[in-house]
Length: 406
Image (cartoon, rainbow, N blue to C red; front, top):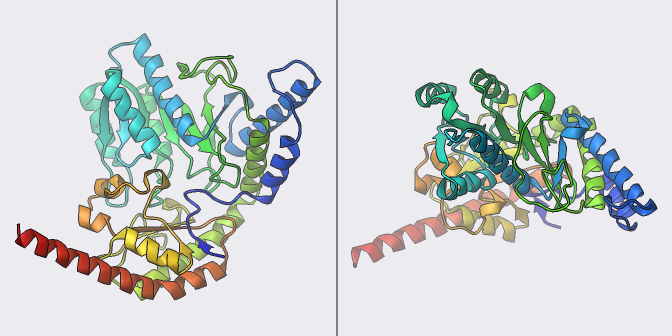
């Protein structure tokens, strides 16, 4: 069996989630139907809604089920923009961190290209943390009455940086600006409480926490106005129409309850494995650079399951494939942009040049990770790195020779 170090992309379904999924999926019933099967399905959905609300620190009526994090992000960003801009047309600016997941980044860019929005990309420091001074200056410079919304992820999917959400929301509140946060990586990994955060909207996903792929939720404040993105049967507060996936929702709830009930202990266990990976990489490849906050300095600023490095002289894809051949499954960054031959926009926003950014490798841990996984990784890394570096140097020399003959 391969060693799986790509839990940030998706994590294996947990035993409680699998049990819930197989139990419910065998039963028929549309939760919008009025007969007995429909009412039983509705009861399952509402019980799951309460479970997820409790796990995320929300009221059950604030849980809007979606097909996953990408849909939740689209619904939040487009819905908030259209609602705010529709009521007050001068609100065209969207303040957005420069390290967002593609689900948010591309949505903002689409609104700018097609809906008259103006995207304001907020800078981050060398660890990928939003610069609060820059945010405050932008609010003062542009005028709060021109801002439709602010969106900033709770934790970064590539380098694991935890953002100062409480500070961001507190600052935005002074200007009356609603804040959305993509909490897909944070929920189930660190303590997340929607009510305490003061957020207007927050996106979460099932398959990142041990639930199935294809189900997620947008947590939406009860007083927050949102324009629907899709229309139909009026399900989910008439914000997100469509027949609900009863079995997927039940499994999502089971995963949420499981992962949050033992969060502190599991964080310590996974964080210990991550620290072993960081120490092993630094020992085997001294020139490798940890990207994102160093957990030895302040563990709260980094996700417990994330270790992200750049390897000078290596192409990230080469190292990935060589590790894969050795039975170690890792990633060069976001799975949603895998296969796209360009350096990470997150690393570029953090100040890295393109060549350095191309040497990225992310190792992410989850509920199935164990010390043996780390041992296997430590054994495979030196040879894989040496071969990847040789391939990278050969490719670099070939490029120089080709350029010199042109």
